[in-house]
Length: 411
Image (tube, rainbow, N blue to C red):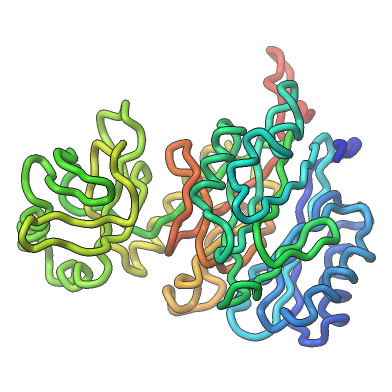
C-alpha cells in the first residue's frame, strides 16, 4: 500500500465489552472515530476475545465496512488489551487504529509449510532497497506454523527491522484460531504487515527474570544439552548455587529456574537484558547434563535466572524506563502489547497492570494488543519466540536530523 499523505503519525486504542457482535463493533468503531477526530486510519488492528470466535467474521466485516480506508489486521485471542484495560474474562473487542502519513504498508500472509518462502517471496519484494522495512507486526497460528523458521526468515529478509507480535490464543485445537487480513479470514498460517517510511520502531521485551549467580562459559554441549559449565557438570553448578541462595530464592528454584543464553559473541560483559531466557527441560543425574528448550551450538555464555511477580514487575518497569529515555522525551505515538497468558492479573494480583505501567512511563501512549500463546520480539538484534514475556512494539513518527540551528522536522 502506498504511503498516506501529510500529517502526523497518530494512534488510538479502544475497547468494547459488549457481548452482541454488532454492538461491540459499533462501540469500538464509534470510540475510534471520536478519538481520531474525523481522520481516516490507514491501519486498524482488531483483537477479538474467544467469546466472539463464532461471530468473528461478522464483526470484522462490520469494522471493515465502517473503516474502509484502513488495512485491517487481527486475530482471535483468549483475552484482549485496549483503551487502558486488559479484559481477561468475558467478551472483549480491542481496536488499535493508526493514521500513518508517509508510511508504506505491505500486508503479507504465510501458508503452513512455507515459512521460509518470505525470503524470496512477498515480504522481500514489498519495498525494495530504497525503502527498507522499519518494522513488522506478525500474528501466528501456533498449531500450523513453525515460528522459529518464520522468525529466522524475517530476520534474514529485513535484518534491521523490529519484528514483534504473538501467537493467537483464541482456540485450544487446530483450526479454532482465526487470523484476519484485509477482508480474509484464515484458520492456519500467519498474517502480518510490514512498515516502511516515516516511522521509527522500538521494542520493549520483558522476560520477567533476574539473573542469579555469575555468567559462565559453556564448555561442553550437544544439541540442546549442556554437558559442562566452566568445566563442571551443570547439576553440580546448580547445587552450589542453591546453597548460596536465600530461602525465598531456594523456593523459586523448584519451579521457576531458567537458563539465560548470552546473546552477542563480541560482548565482554552481560546484563539482564542481554540474555534469552529458556526453560530447563530435564537433567541426567549420572552425567550431570542439563537439557534446555533451545539449541546451544552457538551459545558461549549462560547464566541461571529466576522468575517471580516482583521480578516481572521490576523488569518491565526497567525496560519501559529505558525506552522512555531512548525516546528523548517524546512519548511514542502508539504501542502494541503482546503479553503472555500467564501474566496479567494471575501474575500481578490486580487487573490492567502492564497497560497502566506502560502508560505511566510513556506519557499516556495509547496501547492495545492481546494475551498470547507465545510472544514475538527481539533480544540483542535477533527475533525470538518467548514464553511468560511481554513484548511491546512502540511506534513514532521519524524525524530528520536537522541542520545546525534548526529544530526537528517530521518527514
